[in-house]
Length: 230
Ligand SMILES: Nc1ncnc2c1ncn2[C@@H]1O[C@H](COP(=O)(O)OP(=O)(O)OP(=O)(O)O)[C@@H](O)[C@H]1O
Ligand SMILES: [Mg+2]
Image (tube, rainbow, N blue to C red; front, side):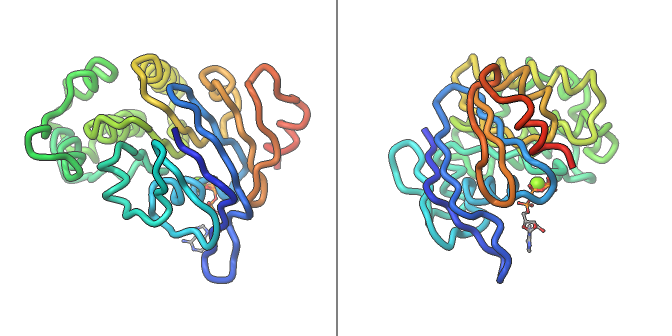
């Protein structure tokens, strides 16, 4: 469904991706793990179109997306949940969800009920301000906002960062349920156990490159830990 081929990405003189190739299988959860600063977010920026590649290609659903604008990628069905959530604190939960409408044609501008089935707390809190929610609730809201687009591919950047364990479990269950409903998931994480629980494929990054990949049960645990511990 999504193929990244030999991606190189630079911020001025500093190179964040050095030849990353990755195949994301349809209706599976692919996890990308790695320490701070190895280029995980940069890889997602390349996928969603937030930063250009200096070399390489991104293909989605059989078309070349490398030069496509971020809005066109969203319209094509790539939903994004950013690192740090980026909820609008002064907008209500409902208004935060409605910001997801911007890439949708007018006739499709409604909030799908599946979002409230996954995260009932959002329905209870529809008229509360985003800033009044707990970190875990804001993360659920950020995922809900991405789902408003009815994405084919959902891309998430460290959704468990700073979240309490009970909500991490809810988020894990929600992602598995979305996969089972046919959504493809690309998940960046630093939390290995979460990926082992819900991931179908695990990819490890180090210094702008992919250094290890496989099914969770086939991974060389020692190598994985060596790449993840500081
Ligand atoms: N906007 C930017 N301008 C300049 N350098 C950047 C920028 N964003 C990231 N970098 C650098 O690029 C490298 C990769 O950063 P990136 O954010 O992709 O890492 P990451 O794996 O997502 O890290 P973290 O786990 O902390 O989120 C780092 O060295 C970082 O300092
Ligand atoms: Mg990051």
